[in-house]
Image 1 (tube, helix red, strand yellow):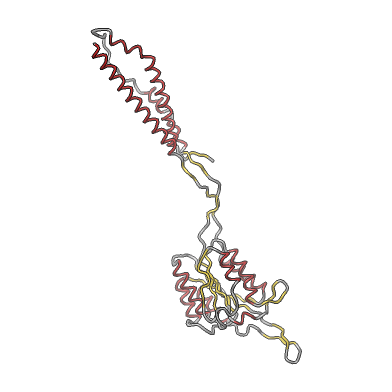
Image 2: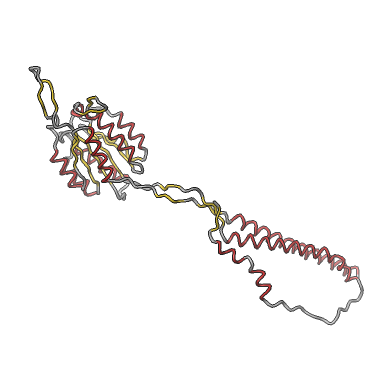
Length: 344
């Protein structure tokens, strides 16, 4: 769509005509007569028709140049289609436990019993897909914490590397404090001025390894403004076969340290969630979406490109043409006068 940024500039179009009508005419020198020694000076009158044609041509060129100059002052521009402006999201780190206990098959997915990590992959992948605009990073931890994906806008890569994670890849134990400390370091080094820093940490046990205690790591997270949401995963009861051939109920999440996970969330301004099955795990990630909503892109932006330089350049070219034509006419008249003077 074409438009004019300053359409009121077109009101200047009749300005030359108004000036001619309103201003008084310049007074010329009037004489009673002409004194000429001979009739040679009247030879130039033969070219009067040519001069009138020249004047008429220059007049219309000047009119066109004025129109282009005023049109350029109105700033013609082309407005593009409406675009959505992506907004800068938050830094969101995800820390997933790969310790040996994540192999416990106390979750169901698609009607079959699966281990905790498989259920986590399915639910967390959907969560990642919804976080458009956020910079997402992935930490995998067991006995040690490893940065699998640095903060990035490439959600597909984060999902692929999460799905490729295997139980025991980072060791059999659990280093919760090291995972939080690594997240603190990464978000602080990459963008210390970011307004929103979030860590979603999922584990099924207690801190049994690592160099930094979980609560000490939580204090570091609090200092840099990293909000930590902790998720304790694992069923509360599960029926297993006994040695005598019967069935007995056990608590597969007996090692889960809910007290420490709750304290970590409280210190950093986050929340602790308990996931006992796949449905509750899905609800938890949906609730995190509500607590940390994705910023909606701003609609209504239209790219604008100005084209004022085209009519401006054309007006300057026509003005230059008029100057050259006027100069050539003066040179021609001077040469004729010199020829007539020599002839006389």
